[in-house]
Image 1 (cartoon, rainbow, N blue to C red):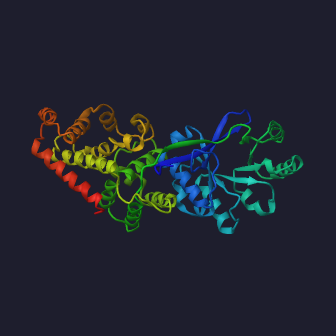
Image 2: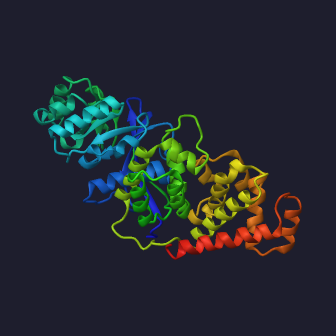
Image 3: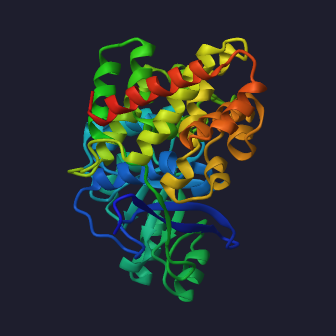
Length: 413
């Protein structure tokens, strides 16, 4: 299996009229449905990262909510506070030990506005009484309960104001029985098996994540953070995608790296980096940028330098210039059409016009960079003739500095 492929399971949750109400998001390690994993923390962190960073929440959930299984460490961690409260239901795994600190944490999450669900319930009110006082939804495992037992368990759950979800529903008889018992939500093979969404993973350099986390913890200034992000364009892309997809900025579009870091905030940035560390594989061969990633970074840096050399064009486009450069090769990097990638990564109109049609100031600079890469002297001369403020020496200087900067990346400097 190619190491840059990612997989995410998704199973529909239906209402009483069999309308789609939500999806449960599931860990998958391949195209094949079903996955064996001993590390619940790794599975949950990977699901969250794939859905809200790698693939994008709109691609995964559309307008629906997503149920996400959580192990005790993630529940107790503030990492999950990064998730959009109006888009997720936090699902307490049946393997989680019910303790006083856990119950306290669940109450805190409920007060923050998160909806909570109890997974794979088959009875035992004495053990789960405090949890049942807190959760919004109880997922009853109908496959494990005989009809009489299902009826008694359901009746006792009526003591709590919870929504009942029948899960692992395999037959029409189970559907009819649960409808009669008043269940509101349904999930199981009778309706649909999980489907597996696939995508291409941008190769995260684990050393860069550790370095960024250290800088955030040390309260380093914004320029220091930007240096590391610009050395790792894959992290920049995923940061922008995540900030926009979880709706942190409301209706405001995040249009630059600096803006994303400021709007996200240090605390939330630290949580995101922690989540990336949770979802990293135990080992990685991607210690250094790939040649394609280095080329993308070189383009971004060269465009940034060209804007600096010609401030008359627009001084506020430098961040967008770097973004345009690295995104110009993202289609080849991910193996996906650029138009599809941009649907999950909102970008400024200037960047979109430059990438899709080579239009506007950024489009002109991107075309110039491409001509330099192709050593097209005639094309460069023609383009410079209609770009006041730039000349061949300035372009050559920007190109050499960008190459030097990219070589430093390759050598790990």
